Image (cartoon, rainbow, N blue to C red; front, side):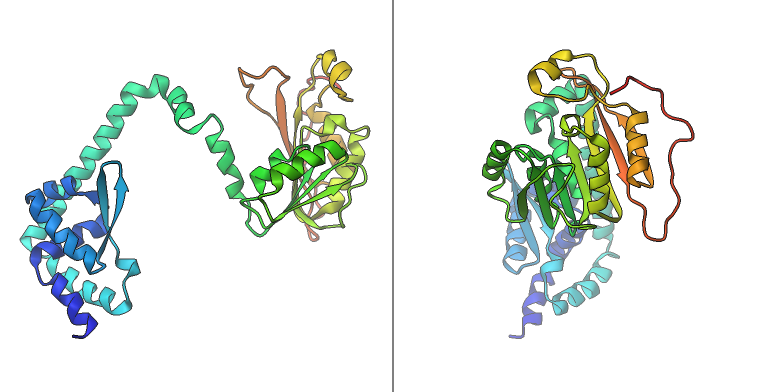
Length: 330
């Protein structure tokens, strides 16, 4: 028997065609399908099994139940064309129109349950979300916004935490640090990632070719550099035209213990200093953003600054007309 006739036999029953029409619009559980079609569970389950056996629907386990959806994209072109003909006719049937009305009610009921949950849980949602997914769930996903063809430099990579966050989302990561013990720890952490290259070198003399990076990150490294201005100039050299440098570091603070016990050379940086060094390094623009303080953090408040290297055809600069309020001097 031709394959198209096998497909046709599955759609010959009105109930199965109604089921498929509903599942084309949304994924539903057996219970929800019973509500929409006004049929007993045994009838719905029997027709779903036949449709699944013929490849028209697929199921995904959700706890103790399954959620079904139309698997039309997985079908061959002839089956999809057949469904287009059948669905156009079935959609005009009175029973199918009633199904569509009841489907809207079922989906509205879903929305109501969700709203009721958040109406009673808003005050504790942050805690619940952290318990379920971790406090940094959203932050871990942010590198997905990067272009997956990029080469990104992790400058002052330390133990490789930032590189590990970037590696799943970009083509290549170059991790650079001057400390051999830090690089040893980074190699262990980054061993699972085949697209990460580790190099030893100083921030003021990066072991990178000119214009070899699409983006670069200086995360909690600039305050350890003897010459921050040279670090920014080196970062600019290694970036391609239009490339971006992200600097994350401490805002100005008075924690002398950081300098005395942790080897910090600079007690944070204000917007004026970062902007001035960025201008001298040749960046077209720099935006300086104080970051929200973490109540659990014991260190100074951090900032994020984004510096953009001009494109070959872009000779303009875009700096604040007047410096942002000075929060302290490095």
